[in-house]
Amino acid sequence: MKISDVIDCLQDFAPLSLQENYDNAGLLTGKSSDECAGILTTLDVTEEVLQEAIQNNCNLVVAHHPIIFRGLKKLNGSNYVERTVISAIKNDIAIYAIHTNLDNVVNGVNKKIAEKLGLQDVQVLSPAKNILKKLVTFSPIQKAEDVRNALFVAGGKLGNYSECSFNIEGTGTFKAEQSANPYIGEIGKRHEENETRIEVIFPAHLQKKIVKSLKDAHPYEEVAYDIYALDNELRDTGSGLVGNLISPLSEEDLLSRIKTEFGLQVIRHSPLLGKKISKIALCGGAGSFLLSLAKSSGAGAFITSDVKYHEFFDADGEILLADIGHFESEQFTISLLADIFKEKFPNFAVQKTKIKTNPVHYYT
Image (cartoon, rainbow, N blue to C red):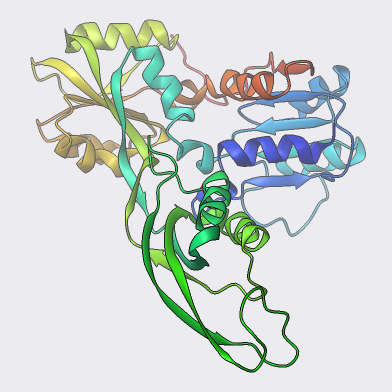
């Protein structure tokens, strides 16, 4: 198995096109064409994690956080980022980061948090926009089913519904020039053909696959198609999640459950409101930008991390805002990545780091 096979698996689960524009997810060191000897999953890549990979014969480290986040102008080992990258290159270790794209898929980082809290009826808190496109093409009626099926295999899925399309029949015209090799009609004569207009909506990252499938399945020498960018929301993609508890909890009981499930020493939170909580909004990592949406969703609590002092005021007596720590909120991502690989490559060795990379410590 090559490293490119692992990358394809990750791309299928959380396409790079879903990362935020400030992010740097993807293959950061190494060559995708190399054979993959072993995979180590981690939240962060540090020098210690790389040594662990070397000792366990893992030449691919898959991390949530990119070790290269800002531009590197020098590689002289003056800081931990440079030293880690140098070590990876010297030891032929590939580093792949799957960051905000993994945050932005419904079964990603936030789903693990929701599972730990036992949430049901989970939905994306802030659905993504501008990542859907529509393909419109025209096929001879007798070949329309073949074209549709090819598009369905490549995409054509909306939420919990697959094989989605719209079809209408009409008349198309064309005239084949002397150098053409027409499927129907005669060279030099205008031809009229009863055709089916087929419309399919698909995620933008599938465009190349959709167009290739269309051209492979379509009988015409020159395939006519249009692609439109859409402003529609994609409900299973975006930031944060919101869901319901099986039974309402007091704020104290909820905080106690969070502390136990996430192994916390401390939780920073806004003032208690004396309310029962049945709906919870959450976002792994730094998610305070979603606070207003959490409040408007009707959630009684919003669980995230990296909340600044003045942002606690923004809870404004409407919601319990709980900061559980960045590492703590995303710690289960290590297992999430390992589970993805184990399902795709059941006979391949996948290891989870045993190193706790959290740079924040608590004096108790």
